[in-house]
Length: 133
Image (cartoon, rainbow, N blue to C red; front, top):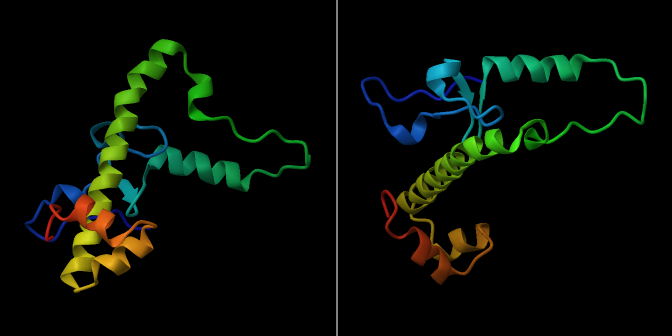
């Protein structure tokens, strides 16, 4: 999947992922990220994922992959918490933009609320001040 790129001469921060969703390293450290609306992956993590998917597993009892925090000590875990919060903020910014596009297309607050599993009123209250609202 191609990395998200801003329009020529336009650097809109909502369209520039700032960290890998898997290792949580910043773009400054990882270089180019392949991005989708809610996640981005760096070259190293993509390569690790490909190796994992290509690996031949013969045992049905292979353990599931561990969670990212299992390999971290307490200090490392605390260092990562702000990065996870930043990832949450990026997802929220993407959602705000998607809702703004829906509103630009004259999609009703009721339809947006239904799509998000909330009432029309809740959708309006949460997203009315977003970009393009």
